[in-house]
Amino acid sequence: MKKRIAALIAAAGRGTRMGSSPRKKQYHLLGDRPILAHTAAIFQESPLITDIVIVVGPEDIPYCQGEIVDKYALSKVQQIVAGGESRTDSVYQGLLSLAPDTHMVLVHDGVRPLFPPSLIPEVVQAVHTYGAAVVAVPVKDTIKISDKDGFVKETPDRDTLWAVQTPQAFSYPLLLQAYRAAQDAGLTATDDAMLVEALGRRVKLVPGVYENLKITTPADMDLAETLLKRGELP
Image 1 (cartoon, rainbow, N blue to C red):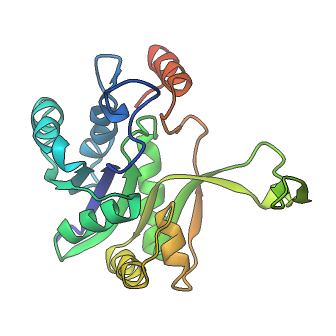
Image 2 (cartoon, one colour):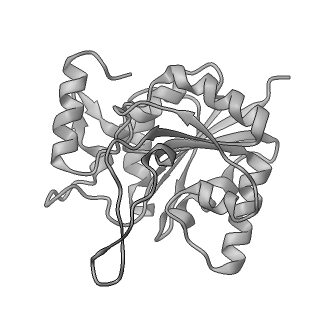
C-alpha cells in the first residue's frame, strides 16, 4: 500500500496583506491565477503527494474552496482548515486534520509558488532517512549579530549559515509530537524545525534554490512575474 504523504499549505495568520492592498497576498494574481493556486498545483501534480490540506483564515474558507480548489481542480485537497492567530496555531490545526495513518507531512508557505517540483523527491528521501528535513540555501551576505544598543556584537562564520525556506518536511508522528509539546509549553516559532529541534532531534538541510522566494512585498511580486514570463515558474 502506498504511504500517505501530505502537503500542508499554510496561508493563514497575521500579516497576510501586501502593502496597502486590501487583498490578502496569497490571492493576488500571478499571471492568470492566484499565488495560492500556483503553490497548491506543485503538490497536486507530484505523484509522491497523496493529500493536501490548506490552512486559511476562517473567513476565507468559502472563497478558497470555490476560487482556488474547485476552479483549478485541486482534487488532492482533502480539507480547507481554519487557521489561528499565529503560524504555529495554524499549522497545528492543519496537523490535527490529517488522517491518522499519515506517514509524512511537508509544510509549505502558501506564498512560495516558485518551489521546484523536482526537489520534492529529495525532501521525501531525506525524511525517510533522517526523519526531519528543511529546504534551505547558503547565505550570500555577511551576517552581523547586534547587541541591545545596535552595535555589532558578533560576526558568525558565513560558511555555516543557511537561509531556511519551505517545504519543511517531517515524519508526521514526530511533527505532531513537537507541536503538542509546544502547545503544552505555550511556545510559538517562526518555523516548524525549531519545534522539532526543541525535542533534541536533528534536522537535515536539503539544498534549495534562491528563486523559491516568499512573496511578501510588491518587489517580490515583480520578481515572481519576471520569472513567470521567463517560463521559470513551476
